[in-house]
Image 1: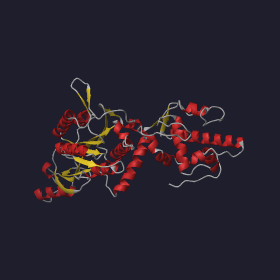
Image 2: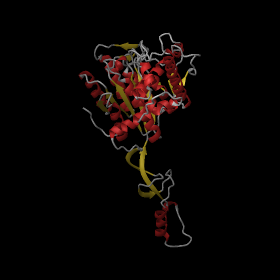
Image 3: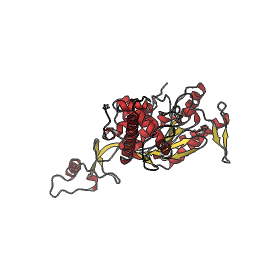
Image 4: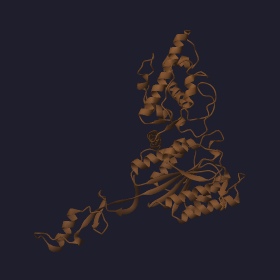
Length: 427
């Protein structure tokens, strides 16, 4: 994406900003999972909140990094004074006006929602100072990503993943079976009750002529009817299980944000290329709950343990309610199961090693999924020997697949697994 650097501020600068390119640059900020921290642009701590102030800070970073700010604005942001207080104040006002207009455009285009419209108080003095009025007011306004915004980020992620995978045909899921449909892809067959009445006219007339000869009028009987066949395309129901325990943002790496990106990309793929499929999202931690896909961008990790068994139980219940040819669970995790729900509803927790009691409960839920015909494909973001053995055992019980991957390759492996449906082991 090419950008234009302006030598001086013009009123139409905000309108010249490409919103989709800007959203793409803001992707990590909009999907933050609680890993963000450190100093913000204007000083102080940025705790990854959803305030209008943090959004403005992120937009400024994106504009500065892409070279879309004027030299005067950049000098002002670096704290360099021009020597003229009036000129510095004017540049400060221009920066505030630019951000205000961009945020309004994002709202008008339907990418963002705000609790209240972004309004700057009269006068722009000390807009970004520690005690600035606009900064104080911006802290009171919360923003959220709309479904359109989340869908756009999913599309961008999917496009990037398809580019790394190579040429991929994202149609329906092919099977070795045949069925009647509009597209003819195989030899015709005698019509049976329930088939799509997509008549093969030459074959139908040929059967009638072979039976009665060339007569006028030609009598057609039920047995003469021939219909076209096409490849039977199966439907699939998928539950994406995301581990949101605290370990997903520990050890100097944010593992939850890439998982959210994959979920958004998979949702976009299913809705546009596999309209007969269904996808649900389940978070598992001390317990487990289903979340609407529209709420996925706002989800963050917490001080939780990992109750894998409870997540599998909920996912199995959701899949059994789906009347699809294939049912599968895609589980993304980086830690060992460290919690289980007792019969009385209390949660038993043990973070010290692999607790045999918790493992037994987890394996029992895996076996229940296998008996229900549900495949579990596990994507492990860690390579500890004990965790590798745990994932291999899960795969053996449910006859699923185990992928030991990283945040950089997670999306590629999930996409290839979903589209190709081939058994492969990634070591």
